[in-house]
Structure formats: C-alpha cells, structure tokens
Length: 377
Image 1 (tube, rainbow, N blue to C red):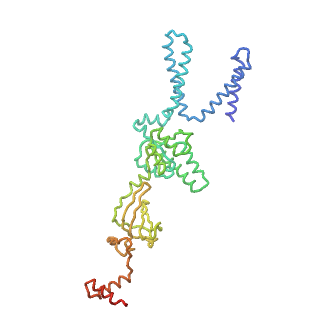
Image 2: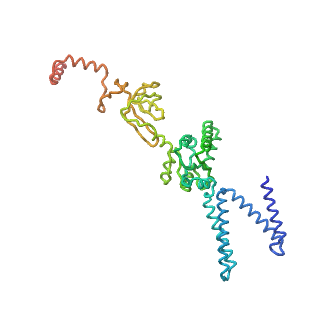
Image 3: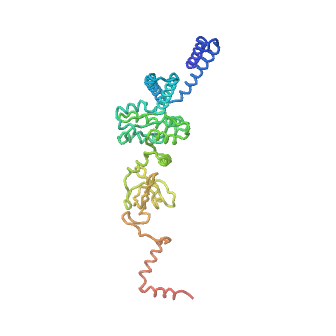
C-alpha cells in the first residue's frame, strides 16, 4: 500500500515540476505531460530493477561511478585541445564511459557479493573453490557428515532456485516428501552453523533454462565451480558438458571394504532374488549380496562364499554361493559340472554304489556284453 502511495507522489511531483518550470516555453500542458511521462518511465525502470539481483545492481552502480570518474579525467585533457564540436565530444564521452562501466559492472556483479569479498580478504586461495549443492545431496544429508570431517574445502554454494525447489518439497501434501524437504532444510542449517564451513546463497538465475539440473550446470560454468550431487543422470550430463562433479555415492562406494572371491561372509537372507532360487541379503554398509540357492534360507543368517563382485557406478553387488545348499562346507568348493549335466539323485547314487561293489569284471566291454546278453530278444 505504501509503495502505491509513494509512486503516486512521484507522478504528482514530476507533473507539477513540468507544469511549474515549463520546460517548453509557453506550453505548460506539454511540460505537465513530459513530467508524467518521466514519472512512469521511472516507475517502469523500478519494476524492471526488481528482477535484478542485488549484487548486479551494486556492480552497475560501481561501474557507472567509475565511468563518470574516467570521463572527468578525459575531459580535463580534451579541454586543452581546440575542437570544433567540443560540447558534443564531452557528452559522447560521458555517455560512453558511464554505459560501458554500468554494463561491465552488472556483468561481473558476483565480484561484489559479501561472501566473496570476505573470502578474498580471509583466504585468497579458497576464492574459486566453489562447491555447488544439488537438491538431492541436501536431502540425502550425508554432505553434513562429510563437512564435519573437514574433507570438503572451499565455499558451499546453495543457489536460490535449489532452495525454491527444496521449499516446494517441504510444502508438499505428501507426508514423505514433506519430511524429506524439511530434513534438507535442517541439513543446510546444520552446515551453516559449522564454524569452518562457508555457505553462500546466490541469487544468480537463468530464466531461459527451465530444468534445475541444467541451471546447476550453467551456474557451475559461470562460477568455475564443481557440482556436488548423488544424482546419476545429472552426473552423466554434467560430465558430457565438461563440468566437474563430486558424486557422494561414488565416494561412499570407494570407502566400502574390499571383498575378494573365496571369502566367507555371514549374512541374513532378507528376500527372494530375481532369478529362480536366489536370495538377497545386505551388508551393514548397504551393499547388496545375491546368494545362489539362498531362497531356502529366507529369514535365516547363513554363511556364504563369495564367487564374484560386480562394481558399477550405481553401487557394488556381491554374488555368493551357499555351500550348505549343495551339502558341502564353506571351505570346500563343489566340483564344477558341465553345462547340461544332470545332478544324480540320492537313490541313483546308492544304486550306483551297490552296482559297483557287486561287479567282479574290470573290463567295461564285458559288462556291456553281459548287459546285452541279459536283454530279452
């Protein structure tokens, strides 16, 4: 309400000035119209400037003042010259230098951000070590634990468009999403309270880019920083566009203990696997363990032998064999069978043993002849 009243006063003041001072002699109505027109132009400029970030405005102001100072210095030299259009050259230099100063100052307005100025005086070596946080890594929460350990240096950057997306998740009607969004806000506040960490909230936005992931990539290019995320797709797209990425999932996978084939693990079979007879278990660090013939041990803790380890960018998978399913101990391995060979049943093995003990002939051909002779015609 007060803003509307203030704008009305500006229109009335400039309109009265145009009427009273009469910039066009003998035509006060024209002066009134010019005053109102300039008032609306000022209001339009004010509405336009509301979309510009504060540091860009400061940069434009500093650039404009620098242009004026430079113009005054140049004019002192030009005054000693005998020029035909001296007044025109003076005006041209003033407009040119002020315009160039404002444009360059607004383009590099991030130089005047408070956090960057403080960092420049505090530690110049960490000035350009920007780590831009993604929404997923803030909600995940492990970034706060990494910051507490001191392994992450530089300035953490939380873009304004990421905070808007985080607030939308926190205001969601779904209770699960709402809890995740609030957890992300708590994690960010926890990082801000750490004395050795610097968190900078930037208002730089890219209106021509709609997706948040692409905005993060453009911001990383603009600030020469790195993106911190655990989003697999964002990781791939950023690498294709030449932007450095710090993936929390890759860090967690690199810190997991190394498991070699032949080692014995003790796991709890939690659910069935995708293939027939498989069981699925998990280690304490969340690594998936696929147990061959482990379906029969659902809900039990068993000892398995590692057969192979599959490492991917999405995580690690351990494939194991349950020796008790084949009747052998974990230390001994079952002799390999050829493809298509059928496992003999217990009755067949007993019958084969009796036949072996009862046979007197050592020549296989004699056994073959005897069997053919006993066959009825």
